[in-house]
Length: 187
Image (cartoon, rainbow, N blue to C red):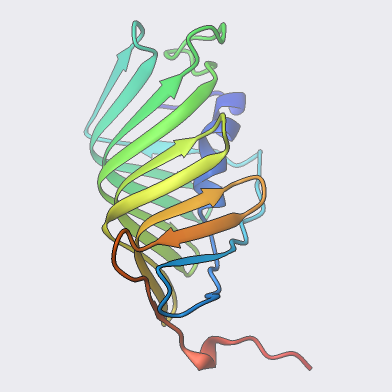
């Protein structure tokens, strides 16, 4: 298990929290679906916990490699994967081992599972780019769900600054299953 300092915690968890989403379909049966994702409220004062079977810090390549049953938790958000590589800025002035280095990118692979409250996403791989503030989940079958609402494609791209999201079918078609009972009613 590894603990990051407060500034590193904020940088590491931003893309994970941005993945907390509600995706509203704009076109059933289209080859791609675009929508806005509603991110969770960020909390800079919540701790982050990372667990894995193995951690290897490579100062020369500015990476920390977590392998085997990786689990990242902050508040109600959980990310699980078989492996996770955290890439740090080479000229950031901090060090990986002290936890004060600036994170550039996080790569996750091997059965990626992301859950926040009632919302879930599964994919084969994921990349969280903190410089461009974009995260991408990819796989033969990327599945997004909240309750009985399900969205299936092969690539989900989210612009974290705006919350704009796009679900691609990669040559096929996206599949959307909506439960009309899940709609919120207004009085």
